[in-house]
Image 1 (cartoon, rainbow, N blue to C red):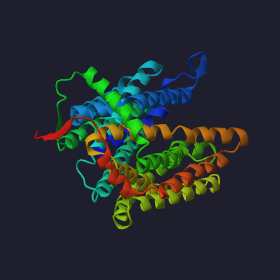
Image 2: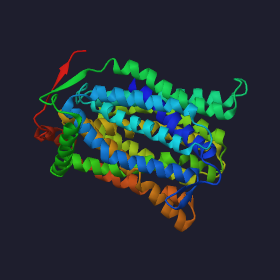
Image 3: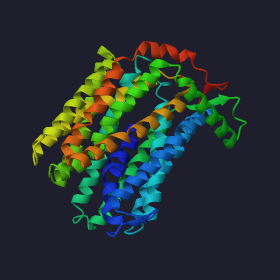
Length: 432
């Protein structure tokens, strides 16, 4: 249910409506001066998202280690979930031209989303076994796709019928974004009520600064030791590659569809909705497939599907609306296979006592890997002048990632969990 809750933010809020609202309504047509250069809405948005990702890249593993040492994952999740949801709702108070306020609201809400996900994912190894972790992770993503898609649909309805509701379009867009925050916060109450509270013996006396220092030292130690665990390291590198291809295709779909394929905004919105709802069934189907043939083989099948989708995007004719929507349905089928099973496979190879720390790394890897695909796209597009060749070039990431994943020995990786040394803290369950 927390997937159901926070997916509204990343789908309708930060994923679709907030960037459009920011670029078209917040930033003036003349742009904004930053570090001696004038940036338009799209450029400024990209710069801020990149800066936020860099800050999170530095902070998340340490924060995860602190949560493990203190046994406070549930408390951290509460803070980040409710804080992020609250700042998402505050978008209703951000007006035209208030660039700094809009960026502050977005960055705080985005940090809440990413940091909350680190804590949330860290519960996965604790509430599952090796036999159930794939199905539980897949079900979480299925609920997320459904919840995010439903909230996006509600927001689109508010925007489309703003006249009948007696509000202008600008207000409707702000309400649509704020609705994702209300959805996130409200359903988080239900999800959090079912999570156990954790405690860590021997660390309660430490203050936050001391805990942060210990967490940072532990993170450095874990990073140094990671190279000694070949299977986990091999999976991480494989994930970096194929996830880069997946995330870049997702991030550039709307721009590619409008600029290269010449498709209308309505067609693009319909396609995003199709992706969300088909992904529900895709996640469930791949959860079942993982039980039959194993998570690694299932991810490889999903990667193969992504290769076909990327080739389809390269070859699709201009203005082919129905083909584009069909391609979106194909994306929905394989999207859950890559995301849900990668999360569960990783979770099955990390030590439970350090789950927040390692999912901090996982979150960082997800964000860090999303840098290189857009860079390759931009380089190929600039050199060749063809966005089609640029989108086709992303197949390289998918293929290389799939090849490395094929060499991962999952059982050996799971056995290596017993060799991790995570410090002296003992984690136990405290009843609510």
